[in-house]
Length: 73
Image 1 (cartoon, rainbow, N blue to C red):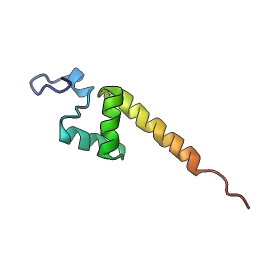
Image 2 (cartoon, rainbow, N blue to C red; image 1 turned 30 degrees about the vertical axis):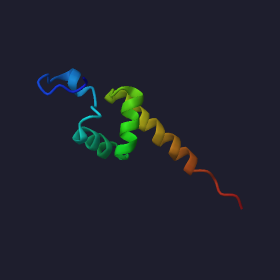
Image 3 (cartoon, one colour; image 1 turned 135 degrees about the vertical axis):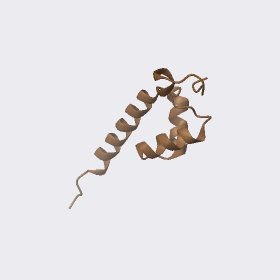
Image 4 (cartoon, rainbow, N blue to C red; image 1 turned 135 degrees about the horizontal axis):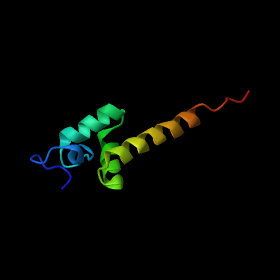
């Protein structure tokens, strides 16, 4: 499993466990997304913290581009 409480170290920190509510809440709060979105990302990227963070940044960048369109006169 991704989160073994006895095995602490770099490998454990590189993953987000979907079965631990405090990890889901922490990742969601840190990246300013909902816990539901975090769970979707965990399923898609198998808990890889680096891949999930990159996906959140890309998602926010796309969202920013679409909201900056010029208004027609």
